[in-house]
Image (cartoon, rainbow, N blue to C red; front, top):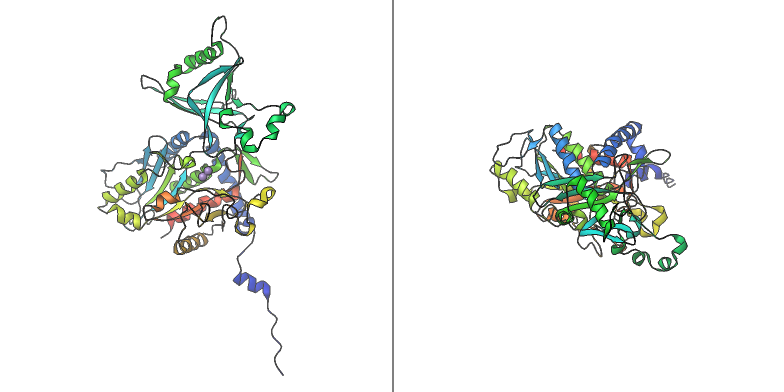
Length: 470
Ligand code: MN
Ligand code: MN
């Protein structure tokens, strides 16, 4: 008689053969969730202190020096365990810990960006209209215009006076500070506006900052509203209108970072993209003991507008930094680069059920499933993307699993729904292996973005494991 076939244990089979879909919080466990909560406190502090690339570099330099890093001197011979940083114009920074093998077998780089979408002033911003003082702006990065109206804004940046002195401004975030805003029309009179498409209803030229409403007191004449604001700026900063030509003034949401949800599992804040990777990449290099290979955390500027300019990663400064490290060891920079790899540490989109139509759920990142890997980004058939090799993806997932990092893999959204790019492209140009690894974000590029505390902590664990890997 033929033997009755054994009943297949599909549960055991699925465990062996199929992807593990256990929830991230379960995979991580209570002890790790607690560590994630603690890590989030430091991150929130950073978010409140550093809202622009300049403020982020100031923070990084201070924190680096407190952790034993010193300014990089290309003529110096470094030894394993030495910690250095290179500050590029106060807007981008590279930090390195010299490894036991130095740069001989390549370096390991975590590259995040510290610029965020925001509202910049035009060179001649101040004007008055109908008894109000206003500021003309030119937005920076990919924003939905309407999201930036009717919210409190704070002012950050620098003004370089004609005599060369540089003034730092930071108004609107400290308690008691005045704040700013961009007005919107009331719904009662919104008929014309509501008929327009979302893209047409709020143009870039409509993003005018409300800066004052009183004319200069005890005075007669023209431009009294403008004069009043300029008088205050002159008293406070010693500047005149023409000094605003040589200035970089940004208006950003004045919100403070806050826990989100009854369970406090998430953080809402301005500018998670990409400070949510920058902070963990900083913390990871600070906690890095003498690594095997030289490790680098690079915090770049200008990613949001295409990594352009000399502080963006399309510039050669990271290349030069690595070349200098290589030269100090008598190595050919191009050989060092060809043996190097990099985690392009940038955010990805988290699946949002309210806008589920834009995602392919099977290949999306979700909040609380850990740090997200993107093999490729880009748009229209992976155009403009760095498509990481199967070999490198294999190495990365082994490295993450060995370090018990909770991670996930996903695409930015549905095929042909849109797309985006990161600095991965710029670094892969140097013949290094690069992959995107970052934190999933809800409401990306909105004035108030949301991430999960567990994912932020797992990003830190991922970068730390990467730096420590053999
Ligand atoms: Mn980004
Ligand atoms: Mn972005």
